[in-house]
Length: 324
Image 1: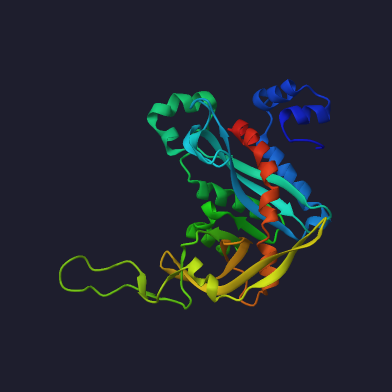
Image 2: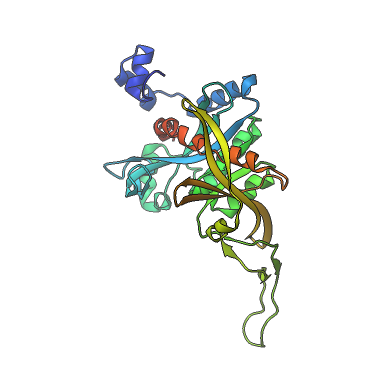
């Protein structure tokens, strides 16, 4: 594409009227799933993409005038920065900044259907819009894992899975990726509780004779601190992250080993901190090995990889909206 990736631009590039492209997308019995599989197969066939790639989970939203479009409802629209009647898709992109001029593409996506869409009152609308009867309510995090699991099962090569805060804060999702033997770099909120030493977990003894006997695993000893409270204790380094027209771009990074607790299990991760600008920092948990050098952690956390997938995701919502 030489210009923007919308229907009119695609039509100009292909020598086809934009309205014809729109009609094809909406009315023709093409398989969106087959398109995604073909894209992934083509990626697997390119030797230069066998290393250096990362998967990025993100979402994209389109404002809608009414609530009769599949998945439309009052929900947060990241483009608008507020809650508005919108259609939201959970999307999976591939980015490789190691090849010449960089490479990125959309891999797959699923339309998020708010829980209200599964009420009996929406049955007729679901049938009219062609929403499969097998669809049931899934959170955005559950949809994200379904997409990642599908790519893993098809053997696509990648170095890491990247999440922004909405998805990275989910201990369940991090556990799924870790259990699949993959590395994640998961952005988390500044107030995420972490432990500098492995906390002692167990079922506490009942205090007194009244009340139920405790049955859930809890932290018995160990003090949690906020992720941002560690910033001043860390050793910072200026690390090159990418080459630009003006030369090497360097950013400040710091990292330390921490523990988090999820579902009664203590998990050891890297807490990676990136200085975005003066007095502005971002935080991420990463399950890379304990001997991973800071340069490698900075490579994994390169924010440009997250930024370049935005233009790809803006168009992909049109596709998954028509895949229903």
